[in-house]
Length: 167
Image 1 (cartoon, one colour):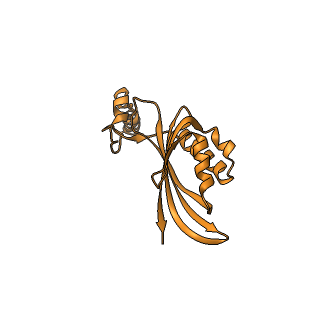
Image 2 (image 1 turned 135 degrees about the horizontal axis):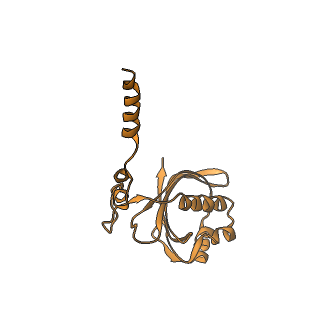
Image 3 (image 1 turned 90 degrees about the vertical axis):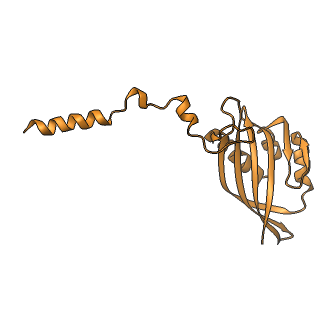
């Protein structure tokens, strides 16, 4: 009778120890995909380092420190603006920012990173912002801004945004 508790303790210990075939493999990880990309590839979660890069961009953008922002973007970065404007290179991006007549304040309300092709370098960060645009202290617009950043080699290669006005 005294052996029963020791037997059950050993049985419990053995049953809770993972076997070699229960350790996840690369194919198991691909089964963790959620959704699909336009290419038909599975979508998986990306890295925190890409999210951190976008948070760093936001910190410099808040200060409107364009020279500090420049280091985060590839020289050949392609930009697509919510109004259909498209351009290439950071100088064109800075010119676009200079055209705006409103003063903006915003809060980043989400950011996450996804990888749409595990076999190729790069991943996408999707970030969202509550934004308020003012002119001479009067609120002109409130919007939700959604941005996509394609990041490869710790540089933004492609950027796009959309704007959803709030009542």
